[in-house]
Length: 216
Image (cartoon, rainbow, N blue to C red; front, side, top):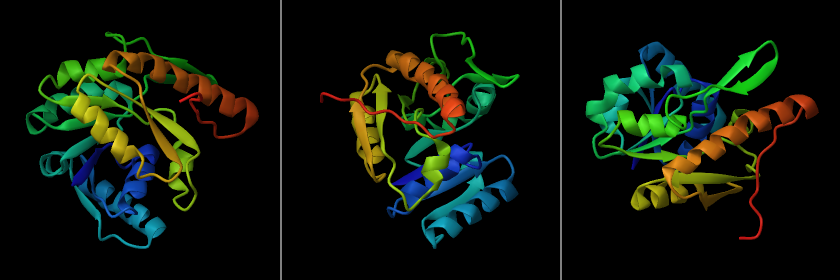
């Protein structure tokens, strides 16, 4: 299995890619600029002491050659990036970590989406793909601390049962992570709205917060 990252040159993509690569999963890092992709691969390789499971490439190449694709782009870039890549994603599992947030004057708030949430909008673009929402509530900084377990649950939402179960299994490759079935993709709206709250709490306490679901 090979996982591709679009927007993989940012903190979230680098953190997740490193976590999977260290577990001997093949990871492709996509970018519109091959130099940025190579630089990201080199950054990850330094943290895991090997680049054997890491592959740079242009976005189209990485999507074409991957079995599962992660979406780590900013919300306002989602539509333009994935309309272009849509033909290469037919039938594939696409995992979105996107949260529609806005940083302004030291405040963090949710951006109003045209549909109910970013994940639903992505599924409307990629109508022939299996979109899964996950990983929005994990700090990119914690993910990049590759030798430390991540003390967090990951809520996974999708309308496709096979895709949901596949991503739940994949999430639990990350040390300390437990995957939680969050139900339908539309439930991603609740997860996406938790993230700005966590970010605001982080600012108040100068910490990296995460979530745990108790009772199950």
